[in-house]
Length: 84
Image (cartoon, rainbow, N blue to C red; front, side, top):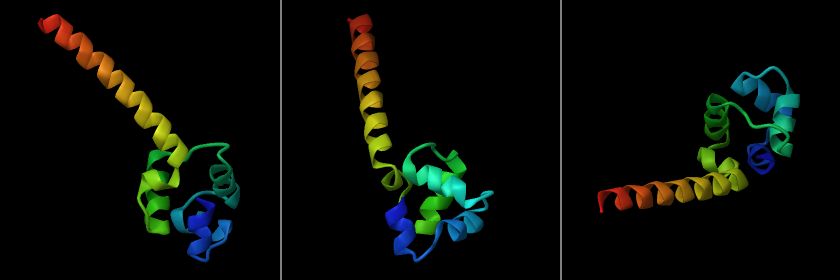
């Protein structure tokens, strides 16, 4: 996220004010990966930084996609076994 913020020429305080969060500390914690913004704040950041939401959190996106695919495969396998 830091790269996108800097590309827009914003400091953390400016980004915080624009998206309506209480302090630059929140932006800092999100950029360092210490916490994850709420869903609405993810979309606000994506709009501010002119990118898609999943691009802001590439590692989290990869982990979540892998988990979803594994669960989907298990479910579909179990459903096809029941149908047979």
